[in-house]
Length: 135
Image: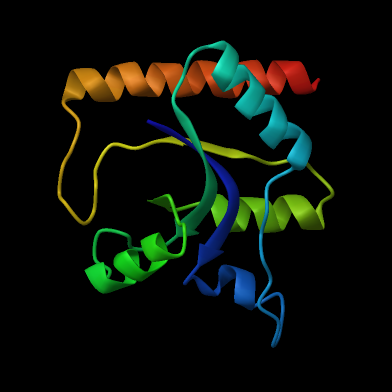
């Protein structure tokens, strides 16, 4: 499946170092987000929209953390979204994370290499189409 990141929480100090004492909530550009959702529907793709968890070490973290995040609607773990959204906000730029799910960190299910390639190509096409539509 494809995940479109509406927001990204993080355990990285990258975001917190900019906002002393504030729990800043990095978010996607709404125009890009709505365009990607629309295009995913047009293309017949299964796309889930919601928060991501940006982690510096998502393969090493405590599974209980992932369980808690999932209970609060977090859809996927990745490594760049929170920084991307924070920097884009500071620079008044647009940003959106579109990802493919390849492994389930709690059940340990994973895609075959063929499924990964197909999913990646669908996600890449969606991302490119979204970027073109935003111009």
